[in-house]
Length: 444
Image (cartoon, rainbow, N blue to C red; front, side, top):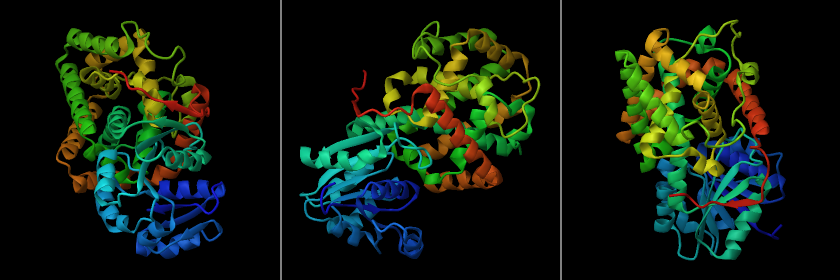
């Protein structure tokens, strides 16, 4: 432990609190603050942790801390750094936790003193996931080797895999591994609400990979809206990808409605060849996600004796989107989130099983069971894309929180099941193994 060194947090949301607890447990002195009206509550919450000192504002945290982490919403980062940045301790290190690094780094460069080092980070998982073995991106933007080594040492208590990227690499890769995944789950929730459905009450949505869709959709809507809005709206790569996902959903749905089997089949197989190889051979030899039999245990409803066939429009569209954008998801596995690994896993499970893939195509053309659901899903994907393209934070929040309220009664159970599902899958797929660090070199 560096004698006398302290770590500061400006912003004590869920991730800030998780970091503060982990670092204080490891013996670090932690200074932290949030908005003035949260001061008393934070003091009470952390009163049993003598290593954590709750301060009244970011000026005090900045003056007292050797390494300051801004843990605030991406859309607010410039204003917060402009306010507290000039108070930064002489020679300190400053970083941030936002999911979009371009505005964060720009704010640091604009408002911090020149003698301050800039080392940013981003844990690629939510606050409810054990950070051990999960990717932790470190960005050495402006720092000496000694300052960067201090950050590595301090954050090593998380047990995460360190991944070293530039700001530009980070934003492109996080878009590739998160933007479309979030758009798909957000659109599912919007479609179910539009149809006034609680999907766990309908046998056609119970069991196997349907459990992944339900549990992760509810997990996302149980979180704070800005976690997803910042990445989607402030990252230009994410905007482009969400737009393409909406276009892929729309075009595939039109082929289904028109009964164009051969055109649909040709497009699906072209996407499979681009992403998974012509015979689905690209990627891991083992499945990234486990089969229906294991996923059945994570159900919010009773498993039906016979499952209805599904055209899986959301999964067909994700691979179509990757194909159109030239994205090969395996290139970014070291920076993948648990949600992305699960989404890629069930997508891979579908596309590497030719029999199942053909069943999806047949169902899409011949079976109208999911037609109204697919219609609302298409509307939802296009609506989310429009709100993101317009940079409409208020519109994003309004839609998100309206759907959030609709599903809120089932959040506790869904969150518990979702955590168990993620833990089981990560253990089975080796995603929870700890490695010292990985130097990532992007392909292309």
